[in-house]
Length: 169
Image (cartoon, rainbow, N blue to C red; front, side, top):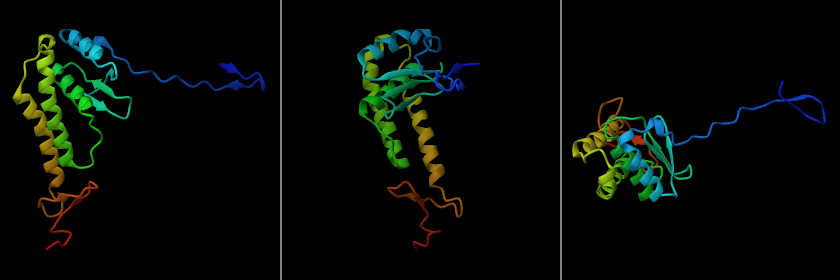
């Protein structure tokens, strides 16, 4: 039945306790465990969790979420750590998103040099460029006007504008 309030003798509704995210080492490729442990030790001001995808969350106590095992797991981890070390925050425009992604990969290259002895991956420019291409393709699709097909521009507030459809002629 649950807890009972002493004042009213009525049952007190119980709420499930939110499960705290953790770094589940069973979800980290075994050949990356030493790397992850060293990174976590070197950067105690960041919190590391495992999750559904690789992401850095600056607003959540500098949280770095490691995605599921996949090719280049170590490089993706270094990339998210690079976002954290660069102090990246949320961005408002597609161009600024592409800029911080490029910056994070540049910093990840430096981190790779530092952690290379623990890193099971080799540095892959092809992987980096393929990753950046996903952002380039995303930005290109957003910039294409759905009405006329021309390339739109994005203002600082993140809104896209079509020079043709909005009569900037």
